[in-house]
Image (tube, rainbow, N blue to C red; front, side):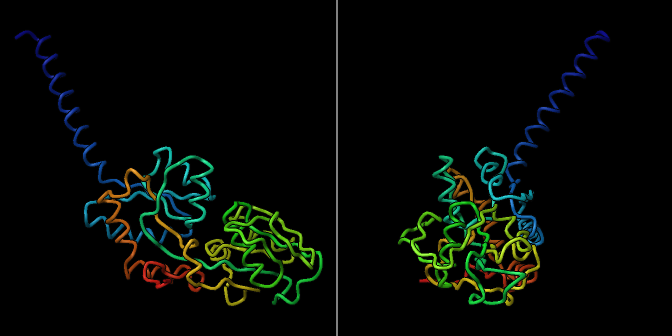
Length: 272
């Protein structure tokens, strides 16, 4: 065999070996699950990551700082699942973006609350007060319903009301709309702000100091946070293992450590 043939044979064997290794790598990647989360949830998902690693699942955690990118990343194949939103938000997103993302497990419910640097109770809210609410349709509706339950406004009987559906506003409250993640930062500029539970936790707000707080009832089901995947993969065995790992005592302990009273584990709630 000539020297040239020997070199060609060695190169062929080396390349064949690389193809085999690549194939093995692809098989292994089937056990990699990428999840998109809020940064504040990272310690919770680190607990999940350790639990599923024992079952051969490599959980990769990506953090997002807004309420839109995680769904877009999931819809475009950049993630296998995400965990940051409630059912109403997902329903609204699917309709607006023509996507087919579905819930595959409950995580927590985070009661929305109204906070202020200027007042301590609802009765102190004066005419023409400015109140910040989230600007996405589902959280805006939830915030308005909270204000209605506090006796500040009245709404048309709609599933997801907007500011256009306010039919009584005796104090002439001015609504300031911001991305949900930014509401807590607005308190110096407004009378009060209606803030999501995870955002309140990030801002170190104590729910005991809230001006008014949402109550958890059977009507709260649409506000339960969920783990979400593409509909085509909703029965994926590895995804189900991740959900099961999340819905554990170890995770519940970490949730309480991170959020305190700003969150309640939802998989064990009886809201019939």
